[in-house]
Image 1 (cartoon, rainbow, N blue to C red):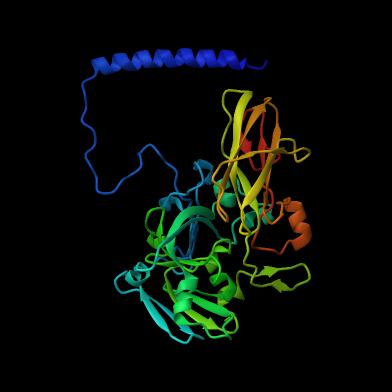
Image 2 (spheres, one colour):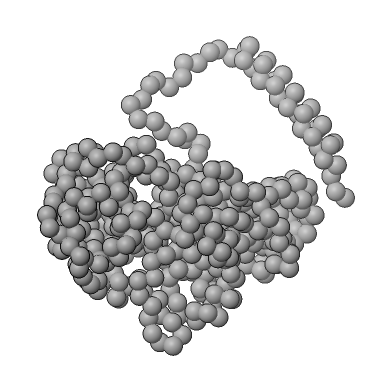
Length: 402
């Protein structure tokens, strides 16, 4: 039998009044307590437990990634302390007083910038997501991610502050034959990626601040390259060099890795743009609907490297029908968007999923459609629809059969 919402509300109000009365009585009886003293840097409550997922069995702890707990997030901005990590040689300890950015190669005037030099330029602040192109790799296999953190946690969204790269390149005076720029990081492996000059002259930035403070060491302190909408590996951290060239460098991370093996045996290279994507974060894997059938809210995140999210649809019947979710404002280009939809659960088994559409007209497709187009040897850029299964007891899982 379905619960009467009005009765439930009345009972809730009664319980609230009772709790308020008990609380008032407790305040009158208990002696006052002095709270915690002032601190130089804020900490979250010890009762909050959201944390990044770090591989427990990694044989090379300096190489790998940790994942953002998207299912425990609110709004669209990821706390800096929970932003996902991806390292190839660990996190270097760089001194901002001595670290420098060199711009050279096919330029008329090679230049060196310190952090202090960059801060003399007018600062630009924008909200953008960063996503590892390997985010969702497990979804190509039978080992589907059991939670949103496992399946989609190599993506985070922040407010970034820094300098547009085109201003720095203008000072260096690019030569006409320059078409690419090799971006090199200051980590132990000197990770380098070839970036089309057109991207650097568009919306690329050298950023030194994240969410109102200096970027964290694991995010590239004291400065990193930010390429909105491009796969995460190209957003070179601890940036130390921009080398203007006529051709791409064909580095390890754009030949042996970060390429897409197609069904015909050929590999797609320089597939920079991240396509439209979404994931329901509540209810999602590992969670449980409590209180039985009744009103709940479906919520999640959507993003696209091509521009703005314009629409998110939700299906609760295995994709037979779709309903539009509400998109929270403001909606930034190449940034997380929070979507919400009221939903009345009847207490039965449900197949829940979402799909996003961006302002390029692209609409997210199913995992089967993705596999049909790309084959089963694909490793990166999985943006297929994520399906959650709600059981009659309220538990939510990634598997159809439990």
